[in-house]
Amino acid sequence: MTDRKHLSDDARDKNPGAGEQVGEGVGGIGGALAGAGLGSAAGPIGTIIGGIAGAAGGWWAGEKVGRAAEDMGEHEDYYREHYRANRREDLDYDEARVGYGVGHIAGRHPEYRGRNFDEVEPTLRSNWRSDRHDYETMRPYVREGYTRTSKGNPLS
Image (cartoon, rainbow, N blue to C red; front, side, top):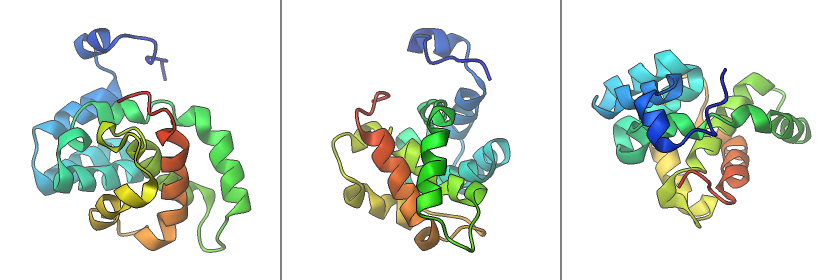
């Protein structure tokens, strides 16, 4: 994957990357189709984000949601270490990574700037859509992803 974070918003708007194209495609689609469109392109994290986009709309359904996940790889070692210390026998890291990813993206939401996890959790919980990952199981990982990226919230 090409590092695109150094590009200006204007340059990225003129030549969007894959994550931005997914976000733009979701922006004009309603409800359940948003979840399906993002999910098929972005895997399990995309399915859940797509469900949130379908229910909550706004930023969740726009191109910036794709940008919010671009640096997740830079946090991978941290998330793996957190998982080792907080593992569940019934959940492997790849499954927990879905929770980290959703929290990671939510932590970049501009309307959540300065808000703690408990304030934004109702939106995440009520719009969570996943056949494989129930919210309560994923909650510790969503919380950690949110807490890690909400500090500074550079995409706001």
